[in-house]
Length: 373
Image 1 (tube, rainbow, N blue to C red):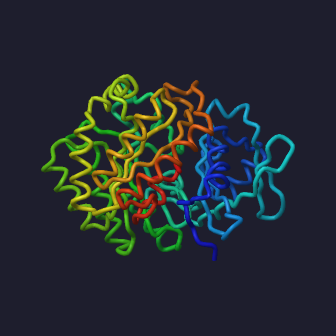
Image 2 (image 1 turned 90 degrees about the vertical axis):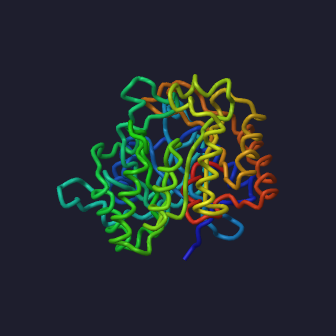
Image 3 (image 1 turned 180 degrees about the horizontal axis):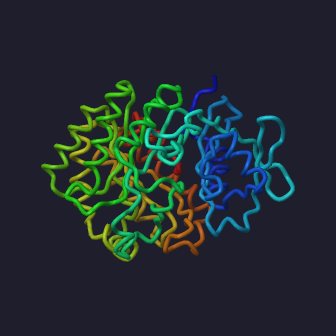
């Protein structure tokens, strides 16, 4: 069996290919979309989102690639082709660019929850052995007209919007029993509650833990500024099998934060630091993650200083190229240049080493930083 690895020093090989495909998008012909949706792990292919893997020519390891085809991808030179039974390639114009490995379609995609919701609308496989679900897709910031301008959480994966903890736990149990998921990432759109939705993730984790006690979990949430409640929820989550925390800052440039994120950006960087510190107290070194988006108008310096700031607090900050989503405020923007993204990756790697961090080294790190590096 081929092992999975997303951290790679082959920046000039897999790193460039991955970044090239993400920042240009990959066009999938309609007929092939039908086949991928029906036979492979591509439940949101018609919504422009899918994953595949790149196989290292050196040692056979797999690197997972998340593709988000926004408007920018309409004129992409890259397109997916089927080269044989179960075999796929990406071509650049009329020349083969790279072979890719599609993930098998889980059997639970064809099942429904006990109240009749298709399981693939509740949670999906994001890479081998890893299930992902956005529990609350009705983000209050979207509803108030103050959405983060890069975000389209309400249309993410085109999933069922009225999920409950019981829904997600039922799907997680099915995925675990099928052998398709050892780790579950639970994310949430922001709620108008003190816990910002983290309380729902913890409730979900508790049910999953009862049904699949060996599954580990990542909790992905916005800063909870009631630090007593934050500690209480994180400890409950850890007891229920959560091993990793993900609290994304997205932008370190203070002059841009509130413009890009009209409400979320009102959280200061100092607030994030306090939350990260609480997370590292509970989940340990290399088990707390955040994300910086490259391509929103920020400087390279702000990103790299941010990576070091996070690292100095024991937090892994992955760098993610902005691939503008349809239905986001920034849907008409262009992604950053490949050369810039690779430069940022190369400059960030020594920072992780300096602070004893391994990108993707934690329990849930493979998926939490899937799109970047």
